[in-house]
Image (cartoon, rainbow, N blue to C red; front, side, top):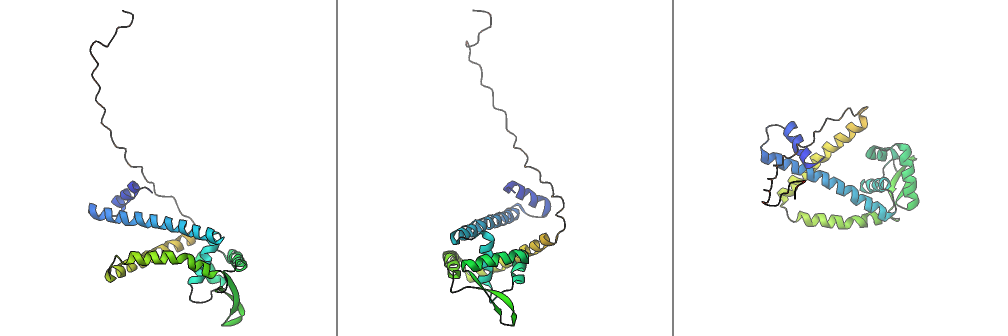
Length: 207
């Protein structure tokens, strides 16, 4: 969606906005989309550096961020992958040294998945350190109150995106997309004709 389509969407769907507020909201949505795209590219670069595919890398990241071991079912819930696909992911991560299968401390008959601290899990954390340092540097430009406001905004956006994820997973049909008209072409004023130079015209057939 182009910036022109975004502004047209806001003008049609979100009423009673001043032009200034419409421009601000359009900028928020635009920057959010750009940030999301950059995040995808960043994580793809991390995965390539680790010798993983993006899905396996994100599963390793999920496991590293959990406060304790996770089950295959929980990992499937977090990622939206099937339990069969998760089994393949965990097999690859275990062979690569990123995770380990260990007995569930609550039920020794079950197996849970944990990050392998003695393996390559520190490699994942190491690659994220520059990003975290960069975020901390950016935060230095804002007051505590401003940062609290930003955190609240980000949290609410995350909750909204999670709702959209669940809606997409649960939808039996996405339906027909709403038509988006192309921006109206800009009317160009005709260029003024240059006056013919005197004495430069000749009549055909005459010399």
